[in-house]
Length: 56
Image (cartoon, rainbow, N blue to C red; front, side):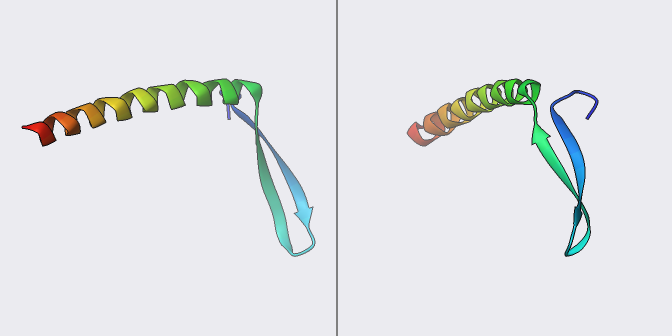
């Protein structure tokens, strides 16, 4: 939580203990986009390797 990617709050519940909720921040969405791009590059690389392996 120190990074500021999300905020949390606790809300009382009529059906049991209080519940903790999370909400992504603008900074969190920006970081999510970076991670998604990294993941996409990784998947492309793996798919390239798999494709080369299938061609051999």
